[in-house]
Image (cartoon, rainbow, N blue to C red; front, side, top):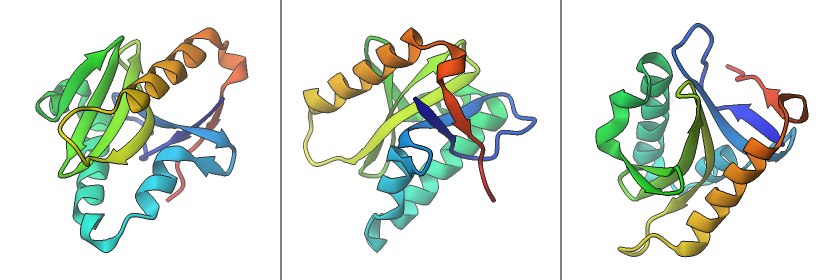
Length: 135
């Protein structure tokens, strides 16, 4: 498994990571980087939430996040949603992002996030590569 540091977390309270499929492919940042211009304000808002979480911890964004099931949370900014879970309250792992198109959360997105979480916790630390944030 490959995890990408989403924001600069050096010296911060929490580490914010996103899952990738290879050392050059991060699911979340790939999604956020190809959004149409009308979503850029929301995208920037998500990055601000990630920064705030890294700086002050999960409680700082509790009003923007909701627990869905099996330890999977969803944070929102406008019509953008990011699925995530945490490890020991100090590591946040974002699985992927979507554009909200309907009222209910698509079961497939939740199932995917649950599967990523299971995979993460079944791996040893040596089996997880971390790609540091680059300015």
